[in-house]
Amino acid sequence: MKVYIDGKYFSEKDAKISVFDHGLLYGDGVFEGIRAYNGRVFKLKEHIERLYYSAKAILLTIPMKHEEITEAVLETCRQNRLQDAYIRLIVTRGIGTLGLNPKTCKRPSVIVIVGKIQLYPPEYYERGLEIITVPTVRNLHSALNPAVKSLNYLNNILAKIEANNGGCEEAIMLNSQGFVSECTGDNIFISRGSHLATPPLTAGALYGITRGVVIDLAKETGMSVAEENLTRYDLFNADECFLTGTGAEVIPVVKIDGRAIGTGKPGPMTRNLVKKYHSLTASSGEPIYGAKTPNVRRKSR
Image 1 (tube, helix red, strand yellow):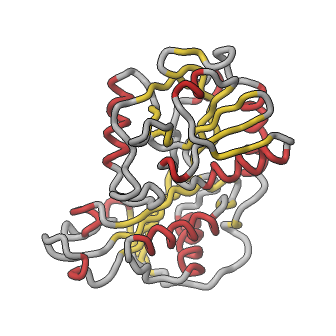
Image 2 (image 1 turned 90 degrees about the horizontal axis):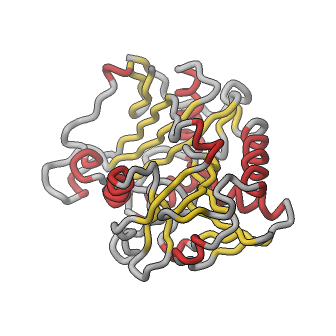
């Protein structure tokens, strides 16, 4: 595996960052998880735009232009000769002191890691997930805005631990008002008849790239779609439920807190959206081995 770090490519065993990098010391940085299918990077432009939005929100200046980051992502895929991949694009605050002050960090670091990912076992896509609501509350907007996709994922990790302790792969997180926010790594949707609903960003949901794609696909099928404050009661009485995320794609949920959702099996609406999503990812995206984009430094070590 070749890993991109600040304009150079390193082998997996030589890919290292300083122990004084504030991304390591304090989770000070931002990231994107991106997918490549059939030699194309799906929604790359949207992911890079969200990376810059997250960075701006925490006053982190990315030391590269949009097109340079685009080329870095594509070239890292080429270096690893991958057609299908999971891509982790990271920007850290950079090397500083042991103190909190980000002013000691002179230059942010940009890292691109390309590999494989299977977020959930394949059988869960066929039979559906059983998930639970956990006591860990989603971060407050006034504390750390959930719209910022930062390197500090402890809030989500604590909820994931509670899911594991409850014997589940995934968990629902509520916000401080008791409304459904999102899952530990995915957005959540429910349907009633031909109406599809998902929590609004104000409830603590991440502006998911896959979430947006699924909303568009649902509208194309004639469904009405709305962002609504949802309670556990709403989830329990849904006809269907599913999760979306870059790693998860679209995965059905068949039981929440011990209650069967709908028939207790993946429903026709969810299966249709899964099919449409797979069709889209198979045919669209930024070509890895196609048109050239502006070069960045390409030194291997």
